[in-house]
Image (cartoon, rainbow, N blue to C red):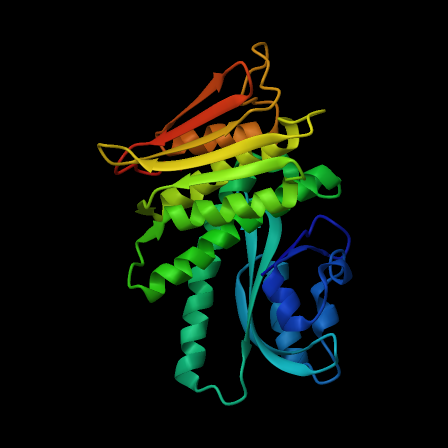
Length: 317
């Protein structure tokens, strides 16, 4: 998966996932800031390139089989889907690229299956990314700022973990729900790995809870914002601490997620979540869309954020 920013010169890549690096052999540092055409080579079909160019110019989704080259120079056939990501006003913000290598001996039926899978993933990604972009429309103008770029990357990777859980659910014939315990556990560990430091421990108390995919995507993004905020700000000038994440099912159905820390706490004079920040707007919009509640508890040490989502929550856009 690749995300590029058409508002910057030559529509450069601003994000690639680990699967892209594995498939192409290019490290992220060698890719960010470049146009995707560096994957093309001498034998790349001009017609395929023209199809991509026309689709991008028209701001329409396009799927094409194109010969690309790995960092080693080895060619591979790539089924590429490119789609525009827009805000709620229909204004172009980013381009999304999803690619899947086609083996030389792959049958047509298998190739068609890949096409349908890519289209399904593209639809899911486009919906979720557009949701974020719609809440923080101006963020596309700040991707060159390190803090904003890091936040955008984290939100994309939060969704990426969800898509991996979707794939696992598919293999278990459970297409309509996500194992939330597995998703939250992986998400918490990933954020702890990136934002944690020596002396700050992460403790998980997770119950098995299944929720619809739409609920999982929004709860996951809320937890990502709250948990990363705890790691980054709760232990300012403190050497040791504890962050806890708890997931449980409510007696009447639905779910409760609690993120707590024993750090410096959020001052009583500070309104949280703040509508003056991108993260605050995202959290507020997501909770409202879930028809859920979020409460902040301030104790003698640290803060406790409790998120509750009712059973059968209907996701409001």
